[in-house]
Amino acid sequence: MPHPIGIDMRTVAGMGPIDHVRLATDMGCKAVSMGLEQTGQSHRYAPWSLREDAALRREVRAALSDGGLRIGLGEGINGSASIAPDAHAGDLDLFAELGTRRIGARDNGLERDRAFDYMARLAEMTRERDMDFAFEFSPVMTFRNLQEALALVAHIGQDRVSVTVDAMHFFRTGGKVRELAELDAALIGHVRLCDGLLKGEGDYAAELESGRLIPGEGELPLREFVDALPRGKTLGLDLSLPQAGLGVEAARDYLVEVVARTRALLA
Image: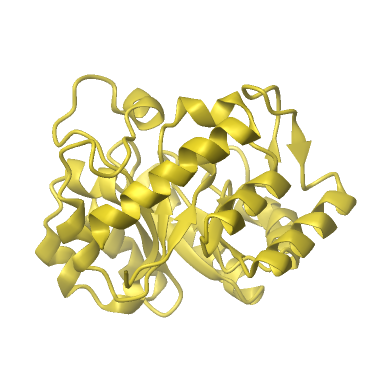
């Protein structure tokens, strides 16, 4: 299979970062996506914070090194109507300390002109710390589809930003596989992989949390989607798996099957 698999943070439902990394390592994955904290109780997982716990950061770095993994996407650095871009500087420093490859961002529904400026500043700050910057479009955000995301790329500068391509967002906003195949490979940053319905049945924001299916269980043409990607691009599994919230061992047992099924579908 020309594309390695990663485990994005939604898939593990709030699991602690050490267990997340070790789980991905055990399944032969190459990357994880990760935020800096989990506040409040999430299923059976206790709260954790990489912001507050320097010892936990050291343990995460060691676990990543031991497993030959990287944080492929640092999450949670998003647009805000009340927080200036520069307020994210401390979090960007922490992601850089953790060896993060790329920062992912969403506009969070900002007014369009502010979203352009906000993302441009985040891209500049990210590159100052020797990380890549990727922007994610979504039908519930200001930049709703691939073409609108490419307008943002043109504004910021192609050499400073790439696009996170989420399979569910891509197809539900009318994306065609040929559009993906025609993109400059450097424009495709992170890739989120899941299955789902081709047409919505209600609240899309709610569907994003509960309707992200295992590859092969939905209607998305994932084989064609993956074939259109640049060879070697890591596919971050971004799934709605209630089993993952039952604890580390339950998550492990189920994810072994999920990863195997994904690899078989795309082989």
